[in-house]
Length: 231
Image 1 (tube, rainbow, N blue to C red):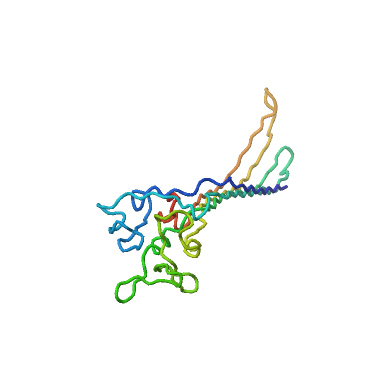
Image 2: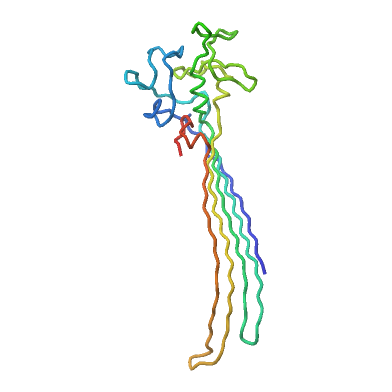
């Protein structure tokens, strides 16, 4: 005998407001740093620092917060059974079950890239370097090795260069898996009549193995998902 089940559920919530960055550095639950020499840092000190102001923002230019959730469930039961002699039978079965859940989160930022994008590219004399459009360049590079314009964390939406924003956009994930394996062997019998009716018994052995695992995006793990709480 046997039985098999598989199901998949996928859903996505509606977009929420862009991810908030409650602060820069430990106060905001992230590793962001605005260097003192960032061309858009008018305070002249690194943020965070003892004399720096608090900075709060939203990642408006990176899009709305959305999440995609997917669950997958598998279950298989298979076995053999038969009669030993009259009134005695046996049953051997195997059960396997697995469930996984994955959440993909959109609308956050790559905090590691954001830090690099806030570090200006300086020439040998310590001066800013600029692109053809007159924007100061950062240490962040695109896939072709070109330095991208500096990211301005203080700017209103629409100011930052689209190429820089594309390098900051990221999809983060969280995943969990449960796994069960079970083997059972049973013997049932009715050895004799008793005053209250036929006496019946059942004996069996069971071996079971269960496991649970979880994984998160590397940016989640180290708190570099800008605007998204760390794992």
